[in-house]
Amino acid sequence: DAKTTQPPSMDCAEGRAANLPCNHSTISGNEYVYWYRQIHSQGPQYIIHGLKNNETNEMASLIITEDRKSSTLILPHATLRDTAVYYCIVRVGSSNTGKLIFGQGTTLQVKP
Amino acid sequence: SAVISQKPSRDICQRGTSLTIQCQVDSQVTMMFWYRQQPGQSLTLIATANQGSEATYESGFVIDKFPISRPNLTFSTLTVSNMSPEDSSIYLCSVARHGGEAFFGQGTRLTVV
Picture (tube, one colour):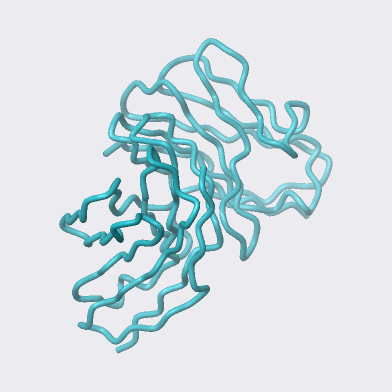
């Protein structure tokens, strides 16, 4: 699975959009981009995933560049409850193997 | 989504002893995964548990230290053997759905004293 690079930390004002970047320059054609988050003392939570098209669900939007070498997770209206560590993971999918290789992620702090 | 229950949620254990962590899923799944999260660190995959076969361990993890059972398609256990303070971590189990997204239990917070 391809390696990802994320900034270690970011701040966002409550109510504003949070844009979390991820670089995955070595991504292969059959690899998907997955995003998870881990709120303190809880298990990681699936957010969204995509292959090459932009994706949106009730939690977030995922924007993947045309060359697929980077992506951005967008939380449109961040709340204090969105404070968490966000992990960008690239893996062959959507197989149901479920094996994930976690990097260090981005700690997002949403401030009032 | 999948509902995953882990027991115990936390424990404090004496060094040299063993702890068995249970993971129960609300539906049948082919593979279950065990992760470790050391204090202040990200998650590291320990092993993949398939029903009816030996677990597959990642580099740096061995069966003698982390024996795993997978007696059926909804249940698995991870044992942390001969514990030392370095084993103090959160241990999480995980399953995946056909769409590829993984779901995690709430974890077992282990402290070894």
